[in-house]
Length: 444
Image (cartoon, rainbow, N blue to C red; front, side, top):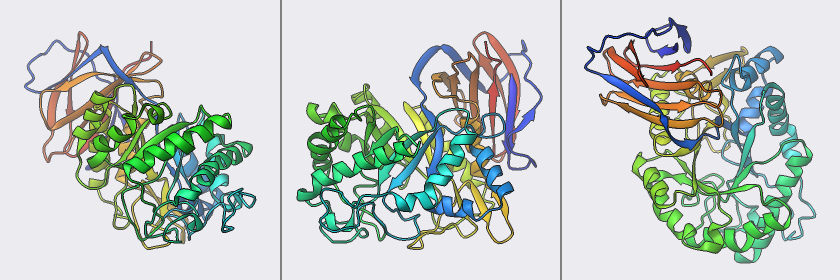
């Protein structure tokens, strides 16, 4: 098995180690056991979000640094091989200000619809990534708010709700956005109904009750996409924290007319973990998919923090082991302040850029994410994987090429020696303190 290691006390992340060799030695108290014959969900992909903030930061870099960022994330041989990403419809908090694709009040026919703002930074960033990626990038489009004139509070920030008389026009905005992006050579794979529909934020936000989301999908968004020949575009509901995932899904999925349009539910990691909500949602509706759609470290850039990477891997492992089919990070990159952000909601990102001296700062989260995205390929199936010790967090996948990737993390202050058992083979290995490793077999 090939071994790739990231450890707090080592100099290089994702560094290749000596191969594991099979052994007959079974004298190990701790084991990670993998059974490739028992298969579960199929992976769609991993990735991050194209935001205006990320795109503006990328544009400020030299061509050499721009190319480095693209290769770090999208190159399948030298980078993370990202294949599943997110973009905002209209503005979000990580835009440079509020904007909408239909600014003209009362323009229900969408005569003023345009994506000129996206052509300034977002689309050039996405298109540059497409050129580097060796595979199509599936793109999830999510709105943070409808245009201000469609809302009860008359503004894009501070919540409010979509006025009933504008539901049809808002659904048509989704159609126009998808068509406009397709004309740019950027296909949209899926849309979510609303980013964080239960949160009134000081930035771009809009409230939907579960019943309002159900009705909007059933009566407006689903039919609008179907009528426009866009029925292949997936619809994702909820797109908020795990804590209310089951209840939210129940309202929408209990209505057959709404449920027929919905591919699955998206969720975030803010607040309490509630991984059980992910498992329960799958158990109740196994025909619907589960997608992690946003997570980041809040409250500034947190430059150099090792906890960032461990937080990511802890969430990814637990989500994947509960039937999640894809995992999307938040901003692909930000500047040294954790921005720009038009309301000061600064956060971290796996790659931070010092735009003054044109340098990149790869955070621990960058390396930890790579242990999944580089080795678990689209189409991979999760396989049975169990650890005998709680401190060894693990997951395993069988790739389409026949290789098996096993990811194991140690968040403790002590090294942990264990036996990795894959089928009838056993190998001895050890994880240093605060480390993560991917063990990869050869392809068939």
